[in-house]
Amino acid sequence: MTEPAPKWVKPLSDYGPLFAFFIAYLLYGLMPATAVLIGTTVLALILSVAVARRVPIMPLVTAAVVAVFGGLTLWFNDETFVKMKPTVVQAIFSLVLLGGLLLGRPLLKPVLGAAWQMDDLGWRKLTLRFGLFFAAMAVLNEAVWRTQSTDFWVTFKVFGIMGLTLLFAVAQAGLMQRHALEEEVSLGEESQD
Image 1 (spheres, helix red, strand yellow):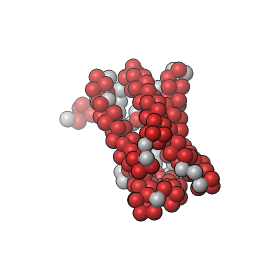
Image 2 (cartoon, rainbow, N blue to C red; image 1 turned 90 degrees about the vertical axis):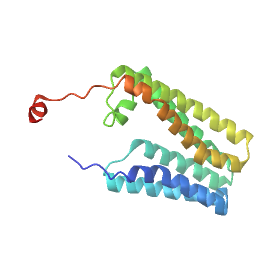
Image 3 (cartoon, helix red, strand yellow; image 1 turned 90 degrees about the horizontal axis):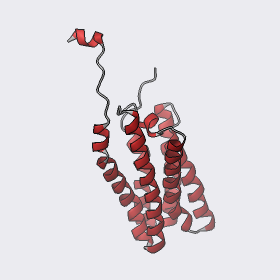
Image 4 (cartoon, rainbow, N blue to C red; image 1 turned 180 degrees about the vertical axis):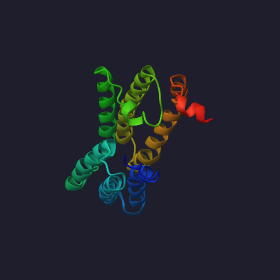
């Protein structure tokens, strides 16, 4: 059995590149910030693999999309590509979750099941909600980057998407509690008390 990765690895690999992008944007502008985003995303993925000793699927997909869309942004010197990247990532997550449901597989269960035990109906409902949420976030990103300034979009990308995702996740606590499984206590554990 492998030891779990230290708790600091996931937040650092998930949010480190985003904050590095924001700081680089404030200091140097969008094109250098895009290069920083690509570099720090790749470094975060390497760190995650080195420490956790496994390839995390969602960060891997995100890194691939960052590399492609960030690379296109720099190659063509066109900020459109990096602005579309959150749309593509959110749409992929939505399609994977909703597609999994259509195939009878609530795909959040293998991702979050070790941290939270729920019945199958709860996993289906939570997967549907997150699938629809990611679809809405893809549409929202499109609306923001197409109608607002780059400064506004960068702030939305860094703080808005993260904040809305956190609020949405917290709002799911009631569903998760209603469908939580009771902890099963084995006879061996009962007799030790």
